[in-house]
Length: 383
Image: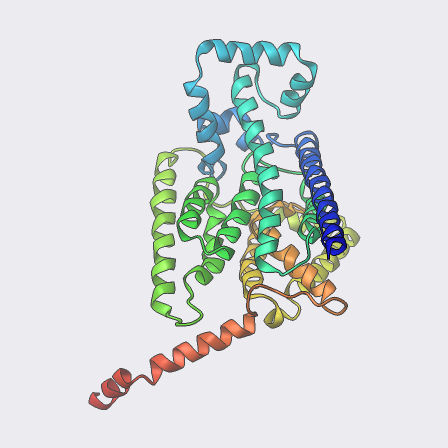
């Protein structure tokens, strides 16, 4: 008996040590992605959304309406005394590493403190995404120890194609959309509404969280469409209560709420047909991996993927060619769905959540009860 306890204790210790190592790798990889993003994403190069213009609120629409990072950055900066501002400018001038970062971040010298604050927000967001995804994976799937950490490393590496173009709100968008999914999976309503509010400040695509959030209000034992409708209406109210005033504040800024880049896609198709065909084939494979056997996948995963159906035409209309960073909002869910597709033929991947087909059956049963309830039958007879 003592020998068995000794072996079990040794195995637990070994697991904990490996877990700490994986945590360290997650942290290192997150920082590496942050550095790569700053140096190679051409961040803040868009003249319509330069760093100084975003912080000062003079950038063009729609960029200027993505206010979370600019407002938090400006708010913290405003609280700092002049001595801190001067120290930041002196440090950026004397410290080679920091100066290199700010040069890659394309910030004016007099915005040194704001740039440092914004960079820290970027770093916190990518680290937050890594550890939030680990928690989300554990909430969705029943997996052995260390598996969530290993898949977190994979999803971080999978971000590489998205890192070659970016804006200051990209990593916060990735983090908040994933955190929203985690709150839904963990059934934390109050936390979810707080996250949804912040995500709405960050970018208008936060509205896509409404789709998976329906599960937050779905009672599997006693399903009620009324609860779901109230939950959705509450979020829509928050969304417009946030986005409408922001639109009014920046109503006189140049630009529009949507940019049309369909012409750029057409030019790429004309001038680089082979690249376009290859990109299309890769996209089709990724879509198939995400949506294959969707009825058999956890509903939590698929409800996070479904907004991608809307994001795809939005990307073709309003996104630059190859700017796949626009899919950050559905990245975590799409990754889990893809993993499920790839592993299902070989490995049983038990889920904490029921399948999409189970939810459809529950929805059909709920509608049936509503249709054939005694109250409804009485109304039909009276009519």
